[in-house]
Amino acid sequence: MDYNQSCAAKGEHYGGRQRHLLHRSMQRAAVNVYRTANSFEMLLFAPGRIKEHFHLDVKGNELTVSYTPPVGFTRPEWVIREYSRGGFQRSFALDESVDMQKISAKYVDGVLQVSMPIVPGKEAVKKVIAVD
Image 1 (cartoon, rainbow, N blue to C red):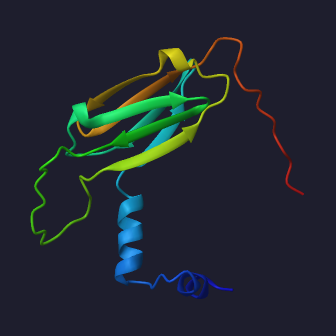
Image 2: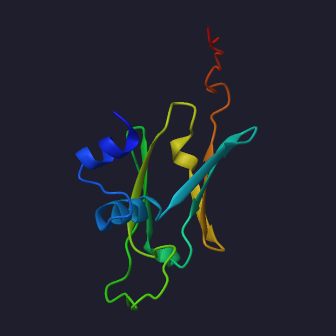
């Protein structure tokens, strides 16, 4: 089955409103994660948000980052709209190498920066897998 058939089977039509809404909702909070010597650093791109409306929770081994717009948040009639300032929720699985008690976050220039320190001695072992 090719791409267009699988999208049609799911009720999504290329260029149609349903696909557009799905695509836009997935783009509300793009995330990049990189590793330093002592932490994982997450950059969650969320311009135009209000810092006090971000919520971060750790439950078990899952970090959830969400944003809820304030009540009465104005929604103008957009002429062009390339990003959303609406709510979102993203969840990330963490392993035992992350010190969950020391996770911190700050919102600077439209980017939520989440720092997840690594517990010394708990770093995950890297295994290289050969491709045959």
